[in-house]
Amino acid sequence: MKEYKMRRGEYLEERIPDMEATVEEYFGDISGTEEYKGSDLYVVEDPDNPVFERIVAGALSYSGKKDKLAVEFEERPAAEVIAEGHADAAEDAVSAKNDFLLEATGRDAKSRRDSLKRTVEDDADTPDGVSE
Image 1 (cartoon, rainbow, N blue to C red):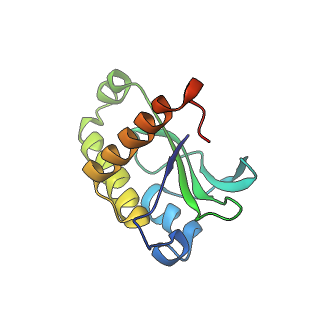
Image 2: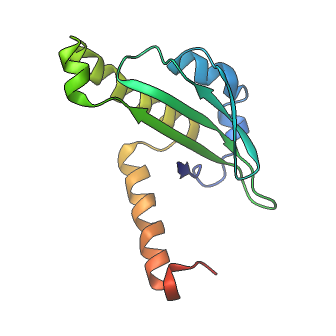
């Protein structure tokens, strides 16, 4: 599960007021919820795009901090997708992921990567990789 921060001064609930509808719009019908770190996230067991096997997404609430977006994209093996004749769906899958993450976080792919690198570097600077 990956967690994404919003841009400075922005909040997830302002960017995506209806998370359930947004997840359905991008990925397909929600089949249920799954608890993660005390928050209920939406689960899409049968995504519209054949590249995805399963998707879990939603708002992750932290006491005293801004909500983060939590997402897990489970993808089918590329060889399997190609063998079924869905090679063109791979490009659509990448676009759907990037568009969803951009809408939710306000950060493009490069900004998200840079942010994740800083988080990893910050963890490496603390003893035993534990944040204070």
